[in-house]
Length: 92
Image (cartoon, rainbow, N blue to C red; front, top):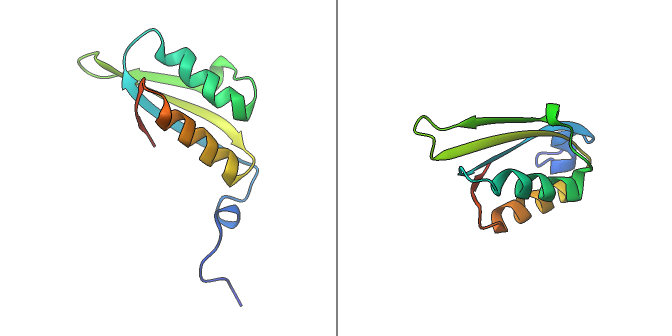
C-alpha cells in the first residue's frame, strides 16, 4: 500500500541536488546577501554553484544556487530567510 499524501522528505529523497532561485534589483549588495543566507544553512559555496543572469534591461538579476539539500527544514529556513531579505524580490 502506498501513501496517498507523501511527505516532502519522501518526495525529495534527501540528500539531493536542489536549485535555489532568487530574483532582485541588480545592486552590489544582493549577491553577498543571498550567498550569506544560503551558506548559513548549506555551507560554503563555490563559485561554480552560482549562476547569474541579468534582465534584458539590466534592472534585475537572478541567481540560481545549486546546493545539496539535506532536509525540508533546511530548505524552508533558506526560503524564509531569503524572503525576509529586503533586497530579494522573489524566491522560487
